Each structure stands twice: as structure tokens, then as C-alpha cells.
Amino acid sequence: MRNKSLDYDQIAADYNRRYQNDRRLGTLNALRAILSEIAPIRILEVGCGTCHWLEGLQASGLSLMGVDKSYAMLKQARALQKTLLCQAAAESLPLKDESYDFIYCVNALHHFSEPQTFIREVQRVLMPGGTLAIIGMDPSDTRNRWYLYDFFTGVFENDLERFPDWNRVKYWVKQAPFSLVQFNDVVFIHDPKTRDSVLQDPFLQKNACSQLALLSQEEYKRGLAQLQAHVNTIQDPGFCYENDIVLSMLRARK
Image 1 (cartoon, rainbow, N blue to C red):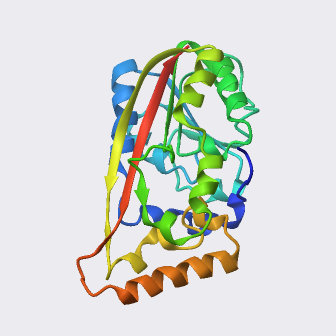
Image 2: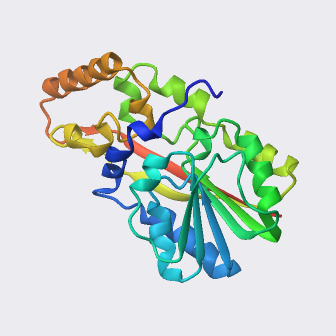
């Protein structure tokens, strides 16, 4: 499953383009709802990248910390109040036992070299009664329909290998052990692209998403050419390129 890894230092400068038109408030609202319910004091995001989600939570006034393996990604973060940032691997957190009461990751689990080890690390670092939340996509969920999979050869197959399916993640969480609190969908992204807008999609940039960043330049150019050729054959300006993504959340308690 861990067949390919992405060097985020190489794409950090372009990464935030994905949030230019949509800040994904559904995900942020799901995190805020947890804060409102459990009232944590110390919050940790693992795989925080450029700190998009931490930035959205800083108004809470709580103690925040972000950990990411990529120093270049962390350098892209804006100034955050009451927020500590640390370069470290998710599988080896340089933190004391039982030191945080809410730990979460968003769209990051598939980037960890050993996601099961990460979950065991969370079990160590969480305070008794603390909460873990994992938010992400499962490409094997047939509700996900993304035009990138149709035009860039091998991208869908790579995602099936890179992303652990939710049943596997649930098993890891139970083995850690955690109590499974809930599993639910938190965001349904329905953002189809038309003939005239698809080529301006920010996610179509080479380094805007891991799916395309993992491709060689030749593979990327070939897929882009296939998409361009298809656009040129479409007469109906209202034709839609599918872009439906489901983000789900697994939430567990220590």
C-alpha cells in the first residue's frame, strides 16, 4: 500500500492553490463541532502541512500545535497565534505521553509511511478520555467520481494502493486500542467542471494535489493532452466533468 511517497518540500510553494476558490468549510465546521462538544484544552494536528486547518481553529483561543514532516510546508504557514509548529514524522511524535486531549489529521493519513504506527502514537500521546479524529477520502467508495481518474492513467490505481480503506482504519483504531465513537460523512464536494472551466481547475496544476504530483512530467503532460483533446470534441458548453468527493470522519476515544 505504501508504494509511493511524495516529497512535499518540492511542491510546498504551490500547495495552497487548492484553497483559492474553496476553503472546505465543511471540514472546518466538523472540527469546530468537536471542539464545542468536548472542550479540549490542548489540540494537535498531525500532517498539518501549511496549517490551513489550524488557521481556521486559532480563533478558539486554545493551545494549538501542528506537526508535519515537511519543513518547506511548515514555512508556508501564516503567522498563527498560540500555535506551535514542529517538524516530525507522524509515526514518531516528539511529545510526552498523555499530553494532548484532541488529536486530528485531515487528508493526511495516506501520506504517512506507517499509518497503523501513527495511530498507536496517538494512543500514547492522548490523555485518558482524549479524542482522535481522522478525516479523509476512500477512493474505493463508489460515490467518489473524479474526472482526473478518467484522463490521467494510473492515478486511480495509485490511489487505491495509497489510501487505506475505512474498514482497515477502523481495525487499526480498535487494535490500538480505542473505543470507536462514530463514523460519518462530513463533506460532500459536488463541484463539476464545464467544458469552459475544467482547464482552469486549481487541482489540475501539477503540484496542487498528490495524485498529479506523483506523476512524471511525461505522464502528466500525456494526461493533460488527453483532457484537452476531449474538451476540444465537446460541443455542449454545459457538459460536466465529474468532481464528486466524499470526505468522511472516523472519531474515536481513548
